[in-house]
Length: 380
Image (cartoon, rainbow, N blue to C red; front, side, top):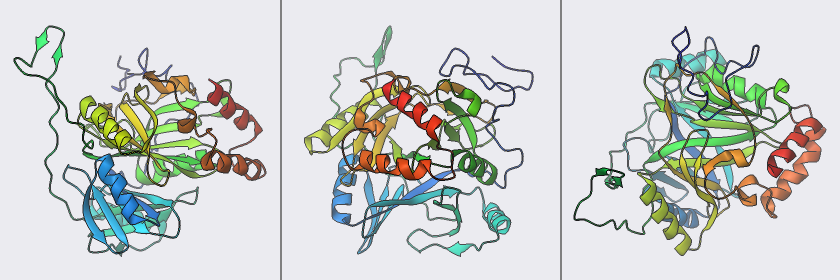
């Protein structure tokens, strides 16, 4: 379906309930400062780099740099490292780095915010402009990084599908081995200041929304989650590079890393299970984004995802709108687990519970009505 503006409505009868109603959020800024190209990398701090590296190798990363207090992890595709981990007293997510389209765009961001362009360490190369989003998170916009050359990557297996016979006189024997990560796909963040944070990313980085979710019965109050992609014009981009959701505290939710195909993902999951790591949820296929997914907890409890076969949208597609439900997180697969939803007994659910009191007493987007909506999501 195509409207008179030439933009396509792929959401009708597909993976969102409908498009926007009159007066709802348009999902993009009219005149953003710049339009970033992609996520460059994610930065973490962890006290145990040896444990972090051991999990990373089991998950399918390759170490591109190891220093006494720093660890860089990469995928097989050409580009910068996907993850940068530095030694810290406690485990924490530091923030994302987004790839500027050019050095000129980096300067434009710096001038707009009245901050300096600063050089990055030689291990990464290039320069950064460091910003703070409305949630208080550090956000880097970077350019000029060293490009790591491509590494060998698994080739998707030939499949016999219906009457199409691509494999003859040969068996399928995918190895039970780490699922070779190809690249960083997206990061999901929770914030108590959802609307301000959403608008900040659209206005400053030129990101555009692919799908909005809202609490059932509260659509008139606006969305509570957004799946946000890079605006590359006619060039397709991942359905979401950043996803943001409203919650009682600001935190990292998960990050996702692409692998070659379902066999690599599934066999890699068996390898992780054999190594003693904990699956959070999977294997299934999402609705928003359509990815085949498998979620795991790393050695410090961070949630990380293997994915394959995600949606790619160009800039013409308008946002879809759908109610937010636990059962609506997947087209097929096991029900979303209490661990994935953050309600399993443990440190994460306790921190979320304790944060409720502070959040409800503070000036932010998370009030009693939103709490009731969130609890309904968990029961759905």
